[in-house]
Length: 340
Figure 1 (cartoon, rainbow, N blue to C red):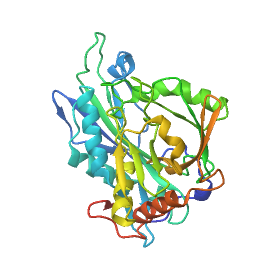
Figure 2 (spheres, helix red, strand yellow):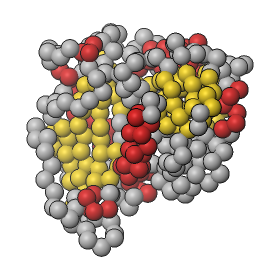
Figure 3 (cartoon, helix red, strand yellow):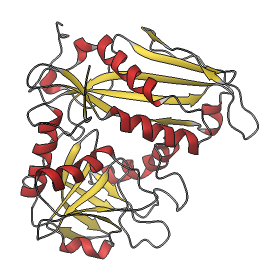
Figure 4 (cartoon, one colour):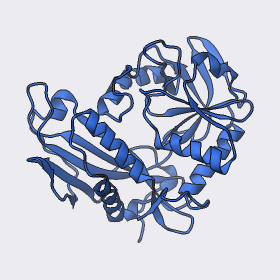
């Protein structure tokens, strides 16, 4: 397959139109078979449920070119499962998990010329999403829905790559207890836009959200889970019912324990603990791991011993091992790599 004429090494994290996308419609209580289409536009009634009451959810995953030239995806079954949870919480019909994975494969196959070559630093980002498409004026779930998947080649999420970033403790709340923080609802991200724009204007790369009930426990950022490394080399990840269960974070916990022989703790993390950690990072599909060099708590700087120059040594091992698995350089646990 001849690749598109794209400057792969200089791609940003931005959308560009590719050849095909998958579309399936839910009507009269059932999903249709779905089709691949070249049409990148959507036509909706002005009263569509997604426009009136934000009834929408999404997923994000990537396709890679491995060292030996194969095109693969990373753990798409977990994306299918997480979207199922999102749909159930938002009173939306679940798109069958097996069909979700097959649709991902179809989209990648149809756009294989856009899968960046091995070693370019770029990947093919895949965005499955669903929304209420029928008219809704009373506050209730829509009766019809559309499930779609598009893809786009992307470079690193943070322009600085693996250079440590600076984040701040945010005064706003990301998610309420018993709310929707544990699912990938579009409304969660709309709520974070004001805060991220303000953070950037103030010179910070991201926000750290604390729990809404007590503001004493670490939750996540607007789009990534936290990981911490203790001074004795333990991986610690925050646990909360209002944190999105990151597939990257769950994978890193396995990598740490099974590949690197590290102790792993998934537990509530008090904010007053973080000054004692050796390393900090943000993890998610888009960035994999972005190291955090310091956290600004209303003018009080918490600086990690790993510093602002490069990724901490333990975080680097985690990053190298996980990306090695994704790129085919390291043998993956069974079921993690799905060949297209």
